[in-house]
Image 1 (tube, rainbow, N blue to C red):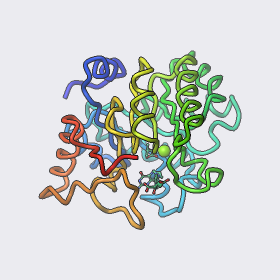
Image 2 (image 1 turned 135 degrees about the vertical axis):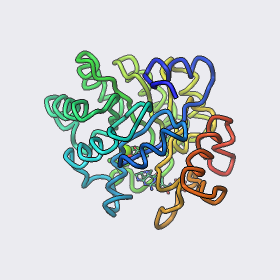
Image 3 (image 1 turned 90 degrees about the horizontal axis):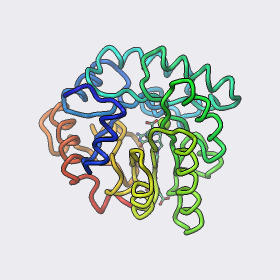
Image 4 (image 1 turned 180 degrees about the horizontal axis):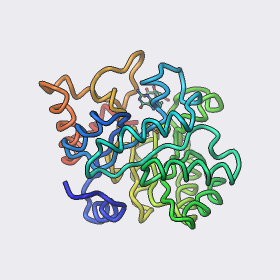
Length: 263
Ligand SMILES: Nc1nc(=O)c2c([nH]1)NC[C@@H]1CN(c3ccc(C(=O)N[C@@H](CCC(=O)O)C(=O)O)cc3)CN21
Ligand SMILES: CC(C)C(=O)C(=O)O
Ligand SMILES: [Mg+2]
C-alpha cells in the first residue's frame, strides 16, 4: 500500500472508492490491519471499553490515548493514523490545542473530536495551526449519559437536518473529514453527498465515503450486546489476518455493511 494521506482519502471520495478504516490500539494489530490493506487506523477512546473494561469511554485519559498512539505508530506502516481526543479535551480552547498538540507529537496525523456546531471555533483554531481534524457527529459516545444510552441519532426529520447542518458548519470551520455514527442510512448518504470532505460511517449505512468498526467487533471478541452495525468477520475466516482482509475487501466491494447492519 502507498502511504495514505488526507489527499488519498479525498481522491478516493472523488473516485467513489470506499475508504476502509478500523480501530487499532497496539503495534501488532496495527501492522496486521495495514497488511490487510486498511487505509485508516483509529486509536479510539473505545479503548476504555474494549481494553480497560469500562462501561463508557469517559474514564479514558490523554495519557492512555498517548500510550496507545505510541504503540500503534511503531506498527502502522502506510495507513493514516487518526486519534481520538478524550472526554473533556474540549473543555477549554487552550486545553483543546494542548491536548491535540500532544496527540500530534505522539504520532497522530488526524485528530478526531466529538461535538456539534459549537465545536466550530475549536476546529478553526486547530486547523489554523496545522492540525487536521475529523469531526465526530451523530451518536457521540462521550455524551452517552446525556443521550440516555447508545441510541440511533437523527431519526426525526428536524434532528437529521440539524446533524447535516452541523456537518456543514464544521467543514466550513476547517474539518478535513466527518465521522458519522449510528444514524439512518438516508442521513449517512445525504451528509456524504452534501460535503466535499470524506465522511466515514459506523452504523450510518452503505453510502458513506468510508466505513469504520472497532477491531474487537470485527474479530468477534466483543462482550455483552453487540450493536446492529457490527459484523464478526472471524466467522468467515481461518485466522485473524484473514478476517481483517475479509473486512477490508467487503468494505472496498461495498458488500459491507449489508441491509441488516443499517438503520
Ligand atoms: N466494542 C465497541 N464497539 C463500538 O462500536 C463502540 C464501542 N465498543 N465503544 C464506544 C462506542 C459505543 N458504541 C455503541 C455501542 C452500542 C450501540 C448500540 O447498541 N446501538 C443500538 C441502537 C439501538 C437504537 O437506538 O435503535 C443498536 O441496536 O445497534 C451503538 C454504538 C460505538 N462504539
Ligand atoms: C467507534 C469509533 C468511531 C470511535 O470513536 C472509537 O473507536 O472510539
Ligand atoms: Mg471514539
